[in-house]
Length: 146
Image (cartoon, rainbow, N blue to C red; front, side, top):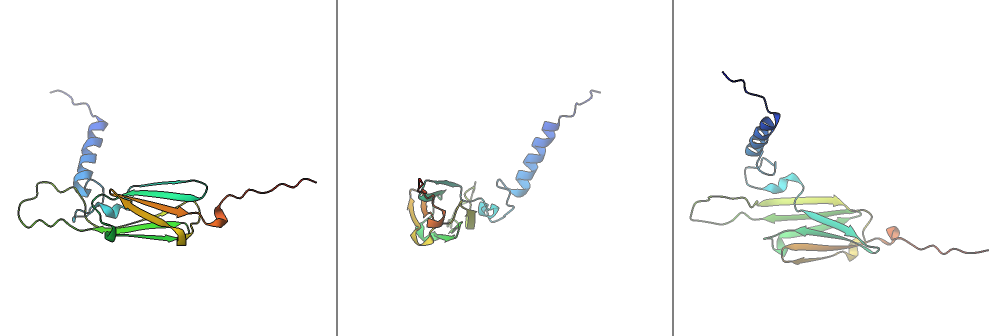
């Protein structure tokens, strides 16, 4: 009888496959097919220049009327809902696109002037411009000589 050598990587791969099977690809455990419950949807890019903060969110397949944006101080919240597909006939073979409600709140680095925030939705990407509050904008201080 041959002795089998224990391989920890084989065990880790088996455990990973089992966790994926139990909790789904995104780890939400949601039986309804909604990956949004994980709290990191949609994917966001955030950057800034001297006057504004900018955020971009990938939201393919959404309509503008399914999205809401809220700004409070230094918090940006994006909410939305993707409706389940309506297919009356046929049999599903694969359903990987999630549906349901989502809400993503992030803190941005500095307070925002909420009255001047603007957003555009183009080709499935939400572009948000968040003007910085005057209080957090860098100010040049004049130096006086005696």
